[in-house]
Structures are given as C-alpha cells and as structure tokens.
Image 1 (tube, helix red, strand yellow):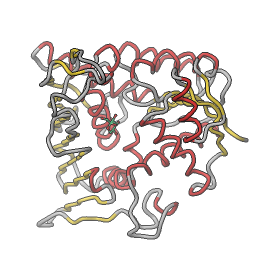
Image 2 (cartoon, helix red, strand yellow; image 1 turned 90 degrees about the horizontal axis):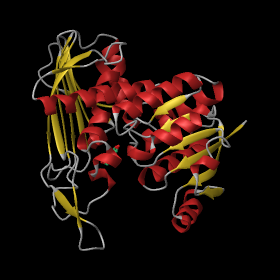
Image 3 (cartoon, helix red, strand yellow; image 1 turned 45 degrees about the vertical axis):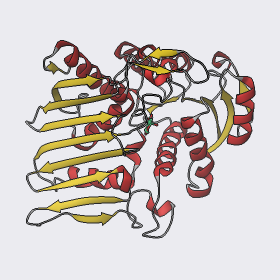
Length: 372
Ligand code: SOE
C-alpha cells in the first residue's frame, strides 16, 4: 500500500517533514511506502518551486480540494490555519498530522480534538522532541523508577531571534494568527516533554495548578520591505511555576530574547534517587547522576540498542535535529498504515494547550490558576 500524503505548508516545517519523508525508505525500510503527492499553499509560483525542490508530484492552491483526496493530510501551516483544514480532513475520514501548538486558542484546540475523536482515524501533534533518542532513554529510566520520587522538574527553551528591535514583524508576533508567542511556540514543547517524561496518565500530566508571567519587550516591529510598523500582540517571553499533584515542583521558561541562545531547550529533573539533564544543543547526550554519585555522568545515547539509533550509523556517529522528524514520521505513518492510535495525538496537543492557556490566564489574573 502506498500512502498518498498531502502537505499544507512549504516553508520551515514543510522542508523538515519533506526531508523526513524522503529519508524513510532509505533508513527505515519497514516504513510504509509514501508518495509526496500534493503540496498546498496560496502563492502558485512559490509553491511550484517548493514542490520541485521538496519532491512533490503536484500542487494545489485550495486545501478544500485536497483534504478528502489524499490518504493523509499534514497541516504544517501557521497556527491560524491549523483548525479549519484539520477539522475538514478529519470529518472526511482523513488521518491528520498537525504542527504544534495544536491551535492559536484553547477553543480551536478543543474543536480539533473533538473532531479527531469523532472521526476515529489516526491523528498526531508534531511534538518532535519526544523522538530524540536521549529523551526516550530518559523516559525509560524514569518509568523504571531509577530517579525515585520526583521533586523538581525544570524546562527552559531559549532563543534570541527577536532581541534586535528591528527584526521584522511576522505572523509569529500576532495574537490572531499565532495565539501566543514564546509561550505557545516554545512552551508547548516544554509542557509536552514534561508531560511525557514525568506526567501520569491524566490529561494535565499530573500538573495541578500554575502561576504564569508573560512579557513583551518590543511593542512594534518593522514590516519587511515597507516603512510601516505593526504591533506585537503576543509575548516575547514567559515563565511559570507548576505544582504537580504528587507534590513535585516545576519551573518553566521560554524566551525569544535570550541573547546568544539559538535553540536551547533544556530539561532537568531531580528525584529522590538521582537527577538528569538534557540539552537540545547536545542532543546525543544525557547527563545522569545516580544515588551516591558525586557528579553527573554524560551518557552518549548512540549505542545500537538505544532508541532508533540502529537505523542510522554505528555507535558514536551522532545524529541531529532533523532526525527527530524522521522518527516521528516513521511512527505516525506506521500507525496510519495499521489504523492505530498515534501518541502524541490531538488529545496530547489539547492537553498541552490547556496548560498554556492556564499560564496565560494566571498572568492576566495575577494569581495561581488550577488546570482543568
Ligand atoms: C521557531 O521558534 C521554532 O522553529 C519553533 O516553531 C519550533 O517548534 C522549534 O522546534 C524550533 O524553533
């Protein structure tokens, strides 16, 4: 069976997923056969160029012509186009894979998760960092209780691409289109990873209440190619405290103003029997401290029996950011071929969104907010 994939979006994420799809037959021979069937966007000329470059058979400028014609629909567009095409595809019985955050608003995310539940077809939220081998390794340790009872979790996602006040305005600075700024774009990854690593099975991932703070440092930005400026209506940075049901404490943070940090996502967890640290800038490594150790040991997670590694290179031959997309596409498309559930699905996308919405509400109200 060949799965015909229709993809909306051909910029950053379109490229990341097209690359992943093209690698699958070479490195994951047991993956289902996939045809990059149709690329969807609005600008016909740019679309044609992208389709040639990214290996798509055809193009379409109207997603309504595509969502019920393909076997799988990938929604990789900006946040404000996540809901409508995804719901339409699901209603037509087409499995959907959608970029994160699931939607700009909690209401849209709820609508999407409901549509996924009603459709009963495979659905996925693109939380690619769950598919880093070192993160999977950490998950195994945590599930085996190797760190004991968890006391502290810490997640920071630092970037610096907006620290220059003259950096141009984009849809990512607009509340209508993006929903939120660093909170949704980066915080969604952190919340999802912490839910994955230490959460129990409830939808809040064991998170009970939050206290959040959002900040916008530059209120307007120049529009590229004109003398105009446009207002920035989202946060440039957020921080939050989280109280977990089991008494654990969490601190979360993300910024687009963290000078010198390009894509620096770190997770730290301290338990009664040890601690671990992960940094996306050294994604082949996991730092681990076990009971009695005087310092952290750095484990290189590139052995043959480490998650996904046997598909790539011999031990020590490190992999990179783009491989996380290959792994997640592999799992998602296998689930589609088998008619199985994929995790993280829209349900997990919605769960992360609930936490983000509570952080935003807490900032507005100036008090702790319980997560529903
Ligand atoms: C931009 O901030 C961005 O590309 C995010 O949208 C991605 O989800 C993250 O993985 C890297 O940074």
